[in-house]
Image 1: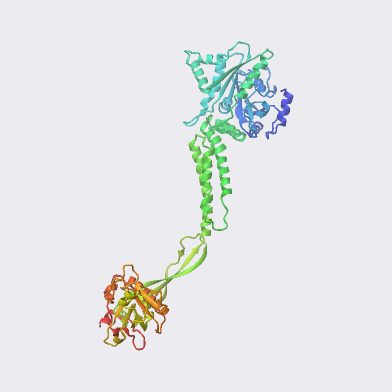
Image 2: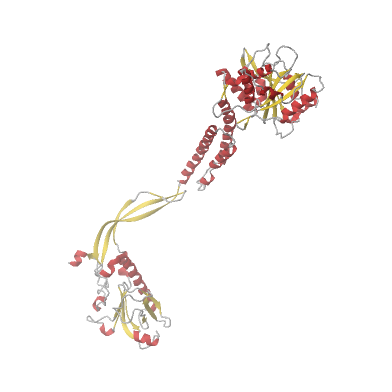
Length: 627
């Protein structure tokens, strides 16, 4: 479009960039007393660029029309100052930046994408000093290098280019660093000759014995793997406008954003990068590409990424007001580290990535550890206490029961026990409780190790006349209780159930039969058809283990009828059940000593009576008993 319309579009564009003057160049790099100085207005002009930056740098012959062609690129003839004076118009570098959308660039254009055109001073103007830093800028910052040859593609033009490329000697590389890939647009301006499109390649393919001329061509090939050749005739010639439009269209179509190791360079980073280049040249007259990579990749991309992920982690880490048992599942650390890896996987500089990742990991884990410490403190709060005691055996003594009963010869262990106590602390975090040290309560107690025998004096003692069914009668009458039952005196004592003919109830009498519950594992059940009868039968399917103390076989059931007795069936069954439980526990506690200490026999009648007052004597030591 015409200049007036284009200027209006640029000014009205909604980009946050504030242009110094609509399509008027801004000083960027100047020299005072031969020292490089970045112009504040130009630096700020660059710093304000928000999106991707597509830099095009114009270098070449002095007074060759660079500024004019650069103005044509932005379709504004006065964007860069130009004249027909023999003296240099451009000193250092002037710059213009404008939105790609205003250039009708075509292709993919993102919001805030900008074309940055850098117009550099001429390299062979005898009336101007050669400032090497200008060429360093071109080598490091220009994705598209437009070299302007004045009038013809001559050997002199190649030598002028070689002066620009000589600035490579000021750029220090290491094994992992390389200069940004650039594309060369070789333009013969004010052309009056006829050139083919392959003219540049033919010039570069020429072979010379002169090593200098041959090295010049090899250097151009090495620096610019991608090359294009254009001609622009003298203004006013028939194809002048079409040549300009062709050059402009190719530059826009083949544009590339400035990046280092795949990291796009934004305006604030590019301004800082320019400051870094000038500073390094001033200090050491050289520029370190690793330093540039660190600035662009680490400080320009990785550090902001680390900062953003750290802030994200800080927002995701919960604020605790109480213990959280699920806290470990809420850690964002690993997810954020994974996000870091994903967002910078395209960067090949592992050392820089590793440094940034380490810093991110340290920051995240430091924040997380503080939350964990707070959670531990909350979790250690005591929410309840309880107390428990234990018995500590101080002394053990073997003693004989010594009762006037069927178990009087049983030897048990008497223990002198001290009682200790401690406090159990229940904490919010759960798990195993904490306990205070055991402390003695200062009291002792004597107890029987075989604790079943402590209940022996409390076992019910029953003696009454019951009707017992004989084995022969049982076989004949199939378990029916009838009048021909035998009357027997039945005694329940010391885990024994005995029955005696009433005529044998005298000091020399004999016991008719006996069930010793230490040997005879039994169960007592109600008789199925007689309301006053109960049955004692083997607990094991195999039957009675011993049958020496009664008549009948191992599967015999013993039926007793309490009709006419002073104790009812329920009392008899409950009492027998207690004796069965006592025998089972006592057997387990005595272990293998059961059969040695408790013999299977029919006791004498005299052993079945209590002492006159119904009491049982105290236990005595084995030594006292034997004495």
